[in-house]
Amino acid sequence: ARANAKKAGVEGNLSFEECDSTKLPQTHDFTLITNFDSLHDMWDPEGCARSIRGALSDEGAWMVVEPNVSDKLEENINPLARAFYSVSMLQCMTCSLAGEGKGYGACMGPRKLREIAEQAGFTRHERLPIENPFNAITLSRP
Image: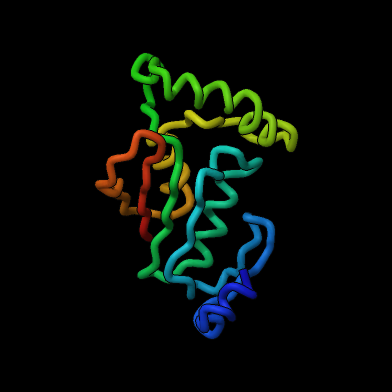
């Protein structure tokens, strides 16, 4: 990523860091932090959300991309959600539970995402109006 940023001439505008998702720098100066199809896999999604809130400025946003599912099981009985549940058992749940995590899985739904965000101190939420059968994209703000 660093080499590509340098090649594109934008290395002065961004940086790449690797750290535990629950241990982001609590600087309140980030303007955008993203999670792409990962929150439901984590051992500690709530800890990740709290860490993100502490890293974001008060004007910042947390963009979360998660599987496009309903909170209601009966609304997820379709070919795509069946695939989500299958992959969830093989990968998502396994990753989370291996670390004694929550085990939310790929079909945790928007209600659980909002609950996690609100517990971390996010008060404004919007699902972006992007129609996609695979992903739901949400912005949460302090």
